[in-house]
Image 1 (tube, rainbow, N blue to C red):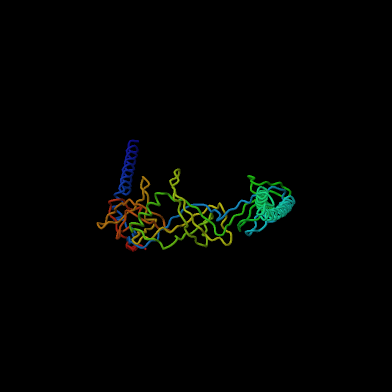
Image 2: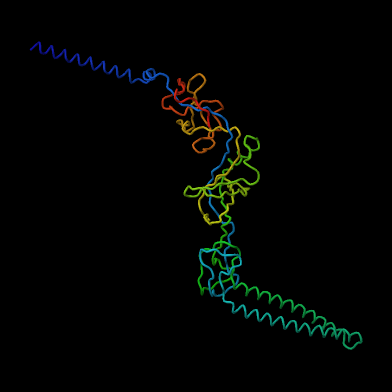
Length: 390
């Protein structure tokens, strides 16, 4: 019985010793510094930063707006006899859109023509009388007062004729207004009235709207701070103009596809919006197929300028620190990892344009970032030699 108890205690002791040894081994192999020492200096892939010519662009959101827009309104009152266009179709300048009942205006025109004929007849009689009285007054055949009255009647006849002509012109204009025509060429929308509707001059509701869509405007906004920065860089020479004349503008549609035709920047507004701190820019694009419609959300790509010494780095070589600042790891000349806080300008494809934080010749670590830490040694992997930045 005693022997059995002794053997059991001995077996338990041996098991405990084995467990402690196992835990100690695990502790040594799992220690971070032990792992670094066991694995040696970590190997990384780098690219050598090389300044190059970079064309900078701005991507700005905006909406399309018609080149010209005309609200069709009646200039006289009356009943609409017929509508002469297809809703949603294209119309030409001067094309008839509506016909208003002309009967009343034709009668007014005829009355004005008759009034003019009467005034001209009265003028002829008054002139003849004044001519006769002029000869008679010289020989005392009529009194001076009679001659003065005849001369005044002739002058009044001239005024009556002029007034009758003006009334006739007005009647002709009003009759012409019964034919409601389009003032511009473009695409017409839906009609707000139908045949038989009563319309009036100066009414608030437009009969229809015509919009010229070729070419078409794209209005975008840019922050005033970015606009000032761009002007300063162009003035200082750190940026060169992308080209003479109007700036060329590309266009991305709502579905992400690229519009095949390029436009031109036409103007920038002279006032900063106090609420948003932005300036409106207007570009003009050809639209021969009518793909762009007013009110569409689009994104423009505006060529800002050319940086002759621009720095492009792969996006996988840039991370973020705990404050959200762009961070890059550089392999220093002493073989140790150096953190760099960057200032990024914009993305171009799969690369970042860096304005601050890197210089020519820096070896940017782009592979093996998970194996390094700031201040620790690292080396370029044998199978991943340093390559010049493209």
